[in-house]
Image 1 (spheres, rainbow, N blue to C red):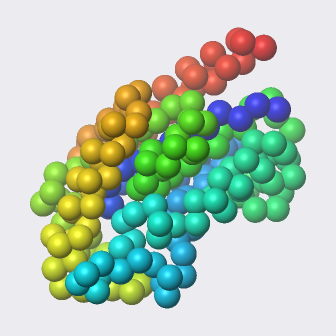
Image 2 (image 1 turned 90 degrees about the vertical axis):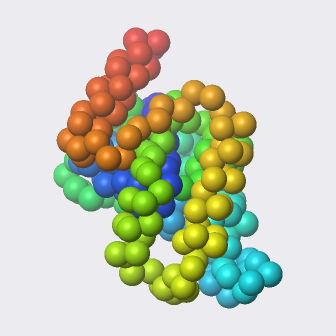
Length: 203
């Protein structure tokens, strides 16, 4: 059994989860692994000189655990999917198939070289500063964002991480997160289906 690995990255509140979940619902035999599931305990998340938690960096994540899960799925999809994989629609997953589509979703998935090396397709959702800030302010986080956290930490770290990402990898498809969700899904779904066909033809 083969695995097609699709990366859906992007800035905070850019639409990563929405696109990933919609793609998962549309593609039979697909699975999502979300980077947000691998945050370290809040007590060990790095703190900057101002006492702000540094969630927007690789050191705040258990990337070794994330890679272990991804490698387990690629090595033995049937076993992994039965035990651990997030399934929004249980009836869409059939382990008796020739290709499993693994959707890896997260804000720093393209900033971790071992993970970056396994992607077959890469997508990055981007939205303007003002839209990002407004969306972030409407969401409830645990713990909540302290005053000034977006401008003092979140946005500067996004710019820093994006620069690092672009220096590491070049074949990323950038998507406008302000486009209608249906259009974004149609674009990525068509692209992934074409990649699946190429994968099958190589057999």
